[in-house]
Length: 277
Image 1 (cartoon, rainbow, N blue to C red):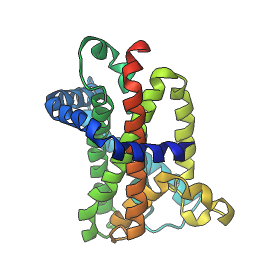
Image 2: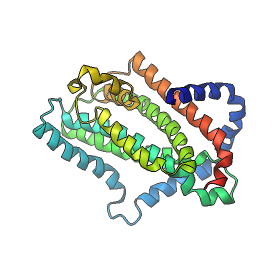
Image 3: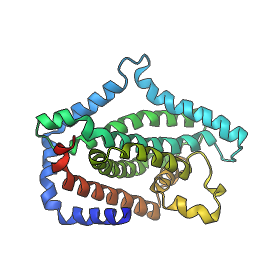
């Protein structure tokens, strides 16, 4: 069903691009509102916090420190420069998790504004996805800090880090738009998605090497989109290479199909939001 939705989204995006173009024009018109929404998310997150924005750096560092002690000493995963391996997977997963969770709540949390003012509704999940990218920027600082402290190799391929990040952003936005629609009509999705995210965190090789997975269960990992995004990101950060043709193809396809499906569902559902929020 999910594959059918993704394919339908891609077809819809191609066939309906002329009808979608006015919505993109509106995005330019409402760019100041988009900026204010992102700014509001950023300031509200650290309101009344002593350390403020530093928590975006300290949180992934603290988690990495605990998990490094557990998995490199107790379980003894033999991974070269484990802290960088762990954090590189962690920041990608957190970008997806935070972005989709924030997008999921975006329509309901903005219901008062939607009822009073006529604005493009997709601007709300988009603002949440951009806010998550801002937070990701600080997490990236934590990753670079760990690379320097652990004296891990610094490769020129880091200049291409924007490529896997762009894939994750587009994919997360598409899934976030789907979730934001589902949340309006089916509030239990909030709890179901929490279970799904937890499951994905174990199916994604964030804190363990892919080599420990038995061959008969490898398909569970291979059908997990986050596995491909994490590996693409690690190729650039850890392995000193550039994304291969296969990595670019699969990641780009996943990102575009997700966005197409998100636009399709959002476009078909947005007029009914007012009846349920």
